[in-house]
Image 1 (cartoon, rainbow, N blue to C red):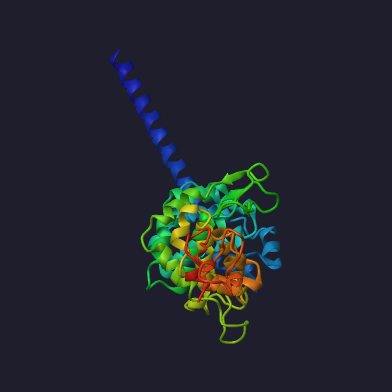
Image 2: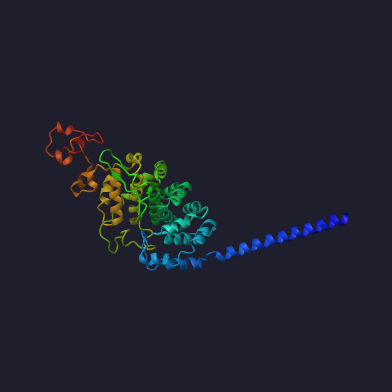
Length: 390
């Protein structure tokens, strides 16, 4: 009986030792596999160079032919490994390169946006890079939020829930931040503040004015909303000094003339690296953020006001980015205001619009008498005597 107990004990000891050895072996194999799939710094640099080609644009709103071709020919096969790197890595250079690689793969590529979203913890990790990375790493992480949030519910809501709004706002209100940091932070806030719809091809929501109230809407029967940006917009409106800083940067535009040497247009001739410190790259993104925040009716008293002059000037910018964002902001903010789509009324927009109950603007009051000048603006209640007469 005693001999049997000793034999059983030895057998159990051998089994336990074998199990421990097997477990250790499995852990070693897993570690080796992880080491094998890790993307080296040199490999990241080469992957980016391959995707980039000759594209030196600071604002890459689309993938050019070369990048689009390389995306489909294997250059983005490392996306899962790079997404995992962004979650686990601590080195600032590798985080910057990882974010940059992801932006090249995700631009104009819904499949890669979806692949990126599958990595557990990715949204929090990228937001942390925005908050704690070097200025260069922070900027490219904001770029990644900008491009990954577009028309992808998992990324759009994931970044919001990970605290991206507050992190981006901290950069926008920081007067010492690098220009390219502020630009991408504002651009990222723009796309987070947007809503996305089940529209064919692009996922955008198309907002229209019903001609009655002072707010644009989207036809959700034709375009169901797949990801609502309203929580982002409401959160942004609560952040002190965010709207004033966006207005400040918007009013640094528009660009003074056509693209030429010494005159940087962010949508045309701004070059990554060379123009990272040039404040001329910021206004388009600032007005872009404001125009999507203006989708929230509660924002109108904050966004309207003295900055209207800047918005109207931006809509006529030589730079297509400033022009596009400026026009959309005026449509979302003052859909009743003719200045956003009619050259005849540009001066009225800049000088402060007046519209009475009969449909007359200031040009109808050129020969008005004192009594007629008491007519009120239907939106503000201010009399024509303040806005038009005299």
